Length: 135
Image (cartoon, rainbow, N blue to C red; front, top):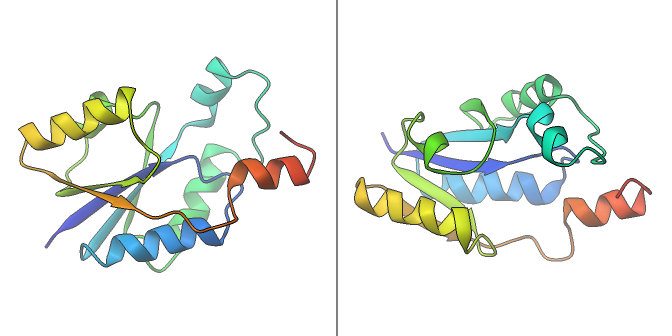
């Protein structure tokens, strides 16, 4: 059984997130969604407007049919990858540089595959926040 892993905040959950999960399922039988811890976000971005608590976001994600497992992480990086049993790392087409490059390198060194997935055009959480006046 192939396991695919993707990371995100998933606070203002939208159709783009669902489509990401559906894309992931094209590569593997088992989808692990890593959701970023809200307290960690606020530690580095104290003015961030978080709509749902970490626990609520986990609950939402666990209820989705394409999602098999939900884990909580603090920051995208090798430390998080080392703790999760997966075969394929799914990154967005815009996830490049810094920590993302380190993750790709770690995957290559540890026999993991990396796939780059397309974003859903014309939708993103940042735009939703702006529309709601919560940016």
